Length: 250
Ligand code: ATP
Image (cartoon, rainbow, N blue to C red; front, side, top):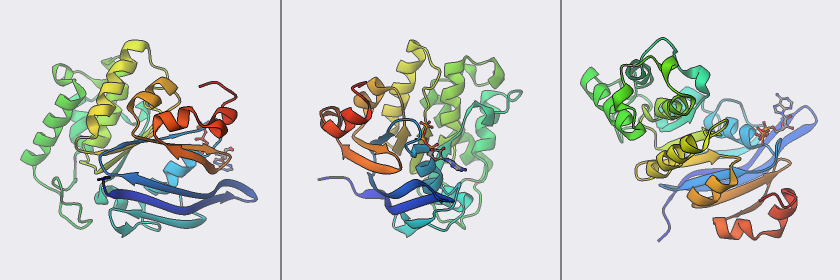
């Protein structure tokens, strides 16, 4: 049986003046899957993320997460419900160690499973456990006392993912986590993302087609603010509309 739907967007629109960045996007993300959003530059992928995670307001439509209508909830409230977005390297505190960064990210998060928005922050012990778990997941235990600025580019990108994981999210939103990476780093990021779906649901924007085709359960293809195709990697690879959108570069 298919996993339940954790996140749903219905007819989500975003207008900037007369410009239609999103023209009514429908999306259904199933729990414990990797769901990728792809499309040419300017297709509206990042805008869609802003809508889903509450970084910007919608112009129309509805967003339901974990059974709750979150359309008009601010981003911090959605974090409490179990949505976490990974931001760029710039969100790391360069002089703090890997562990200290994660400890900050883990602050004030609810215990696993308890995503009641009004749940009080949990204790020091529980936070340390979360941080330990994330360090292990990232494969950065050995570097836990190293300032984050001393990490390689690939390690820093993994730590960004860890900052989101430290919030114990049900769904994690990754916007181009592999940008600017060399081959070895790519492989490690790929393994990390793949491992996440045991415990989390992953929504991924990714330009590297090799990675997308390898790790996605479902792929949504956008073009000019609309969904033009959705399906499993094999279905997307052979879709004529998608091939046309990419001018054969797949
Ligand atoms: P990329 O892969 O290049 O990041 P994307 O698919 O993420 O592209 P978006 O960043 O979502 O695309 O942008 C979608 C469209 O919305 C673009 O044409 C962009 O210029 C436009 N846009 C985004 N933000 C604004 C804004 N604040 N005002 C006006 N137009 C905007």
